[in-house]
Image (cartoon, rainbow, N blue to C red; front, side, top):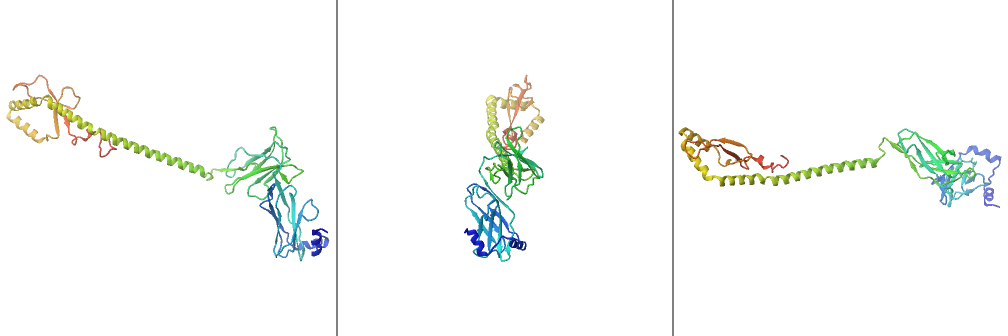
Length: 369
């Protein structure tokens, strides 16, 4: 006698008409699988059945299998039963139901649970037509294709317990077998990541390896933090480059100020030295002769003008061909009462502190020219 039959006899269970007549008084149990109903080959999976607290025994039934697939006797009061599969293969793959027995009778069967094993055929290829970038609220077509002659293709969305869609295979002119899945409208509040599988009709619970994941991107939204970060970094780099260029320009202006501030002073000293060496004695003699030849009134005016000018502010030098500011005067001739044949040219030489414009810029403010 099998253990299953022994358990039924001990509990006085019957699958006859009387027991089934009592099933309508009990709620239908629910069934699910963890971590999911699509299981990679060799992985573990757990099937759960939930009934009522008064349940005395739970039954797991596999379609196309005679008798019960498994039986669970609760060791303590509870409304769930656990059925474990430690190593998933093609044998436990299939469609399951569960039920429970209580003092009120035997419950009806739960909704079906299809347990699928993957990894028996080569993976197909999943792509988006025309592009995986979709506008918010838009639609897209996903193409699952393979060179293997699968009878059907399955599209699954990550995070959902059941397949999104299953379509028959088609063979277009390209030679590959494929299925085209319409998807949408696409919204930004969820993640749109898909995989697809292929299988043959004679073994519908034995799927191929999954395709590579394909994620749809919703355009026109704050969906791209990497792009925003890249734009921010680019802006920061441009600002840093601008600051660096300004600093280099300021440094260059300071160097120009330091090197150019010494030139006017050196040129002034050179001109003064040249003037003093050319005719210092002659100028004094000519000035004396002019004063003697001028009337008394003119001499007084010249004395007042000379007294009003600061000798430290202006220096005159007799020049022959320098292209400077010129002023023509009538210096005295070598003899009293006679004018010279040619006028004498004088250049006004400004002091460093009197004319800062000759210094090539204000050293105290390098930014001004």
